[in-house]
Length: 452
Image 1 (tube, rainbow, N blue to C red):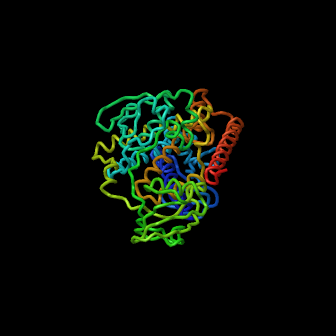
Image 2 (cartoon, one colour; image 1 turned 30 degrees about the vertical axis):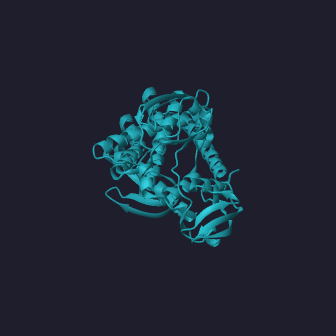
Image 3 (tube, rainbow, N blue to C red; image 1 turned 60 degrees about the horizontal axis):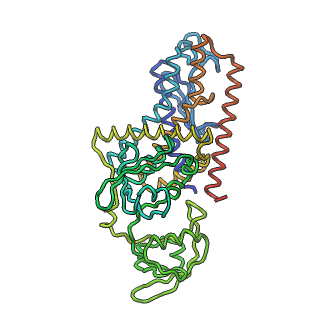
């Protein structure tokens, strides 16, 4: 829990710093005086004044955002000799550029993150289809076990993650999933999955593959224990590396996937294992825990022995040299921006499930998980959150950048600022909308975590 909180504060703090630095930098370039650059809201925990303008740089108590305070006659008295540097006295073009700079900085961060990932190498799993449910839409369209997905829509895909993101994009676009596949004999075939009217069902969390009727191919892994997690359920029951799992509750175990499915289905329950150790058979009773990621999933605390040569056959590494890495990064960022806009737009219109919305609790939980997975996973997570932050800030909600841009455009159109009372009403509406959004996201987070 503490690790997740620290990861959340650090990861979100970096993205907020990037966003606010965009505003800060363009304001400085436009000769607008910056009074304060704050990471976080509320009580100031640390601050330092520096530079010719004595700008205050500070860290504040609530790590859910930040702000850049610019000199502005609407909020403070401004000396006559500094009025030309006040934000409200700048041209509409300059004000819009300053407001756009925050979201643009988030998109630029995502491009740099993706470019770094593609330069280092992004590990993934080759998108080979495993089990197919008879009669499913996948089966009806001639998808078969062993087929490898090579294109979704017009995008070449090398991993399951890229395949699923592109499939969701296809669903949101026109409810037609166009797939190019290569069967186990090397023959190319094409399929169009018509999912008209099923967008809400298919875009619910973790629903896509089960609803389409297939599973990813999982190579058969022998049920041999590689290592035992200290003080986990298996460790407490006396299981050791090299033990071979033969039965769980009198069910014969043929591979690790079968074993894992049984464990996942039995959180906080006792199971009886039959194991083979140095040609002798033992019975062990294990009280399972629940998974830290999902209370409804069982956890035993074992790692399987994996044949590295076998693993390499199904592993895909996306790695490119410059400038290909930059091109790929721009394309990936663009795809995620479009996907985010489509998701939010269809969520607002009720065409897809609101369960996809996640709040600070869910992000904190995910931040802890990806931070444990390493540098590439963390960068990928930060790129997605950065894009979401940039898109959200462009929405025409009065208290975010997009809403302020609308105010500037209206002022340009009518030749004067909107009356202060009107702006206050719109800002109150914006605050109410954001509070509702945060409470709804928090509700989703709690349902996911506690399985309500």
